[in-house]
Image 1: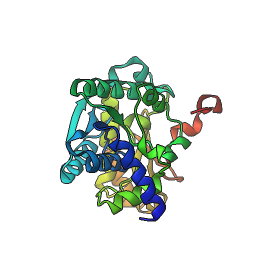
Image 2 (image 1 turned 90 degrees about the vertical axis):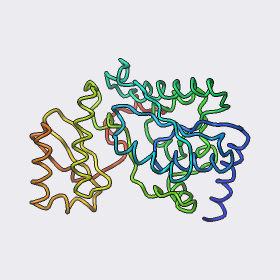
Image 3 (image 1 turned 135 degrees about the vertical axis):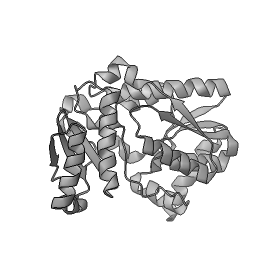
Image 4 (image 1 turned 180 degrees about the horizontal axis):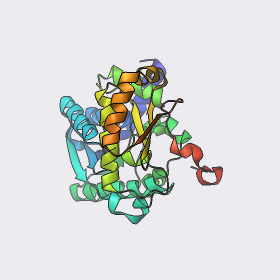
Length: 277
């Protein structure tokens, strides 16, 4: 770890130390895992992770997150959230994430109040400012602290710090809720999210670490990392994948030649929506 990153990480530790007790919104991703690790190091049992369990989170992600925390000796509370029952979330507009995060952080705030915990933390990092994130508004409204962003730590630095601290998920591919695979305006239903989850399990079974199945009714567009596309396009493999997705109702299966890219849905949003995000 270089000196500059070490100084930034100490700023994170100092910020958390001054809070005395915290709940960390934990997803199992490297960003929130790093925040939880540092919080645990400086506050011990006064730092607890909280992970939301809902139809929008793949079961495998929840299991992996809990295993990682257990391996680090960190307490994590599983909180059932019901964002899929909120009309604002279900109608799936560009502001969908605002309703999700309002539900999540509202539940965390209630839990913090019940336990007498001083503050809520999340894993928002400096690079996250570059994407359209309506959920950020909810975090601000509910006073959630983002120590990585405050210290100026970006994604690449997060991975370096996580590796240096021995976090097994330091190189874990980025993940997002299952609703991010559904075009804006398509109603979100638990059954639809389950279908997408099962489709992505097919790709994970084939050994693709970073994979998305973009839902389009009876059609599905598969995204994997660019360098993995040739392997996916092998005739026998593609036929196997397409067959299994057809069993889930995806009769038209295509592979995006551009590969996986973060914020795919947001590429189509007009600037008037994302300005000031």
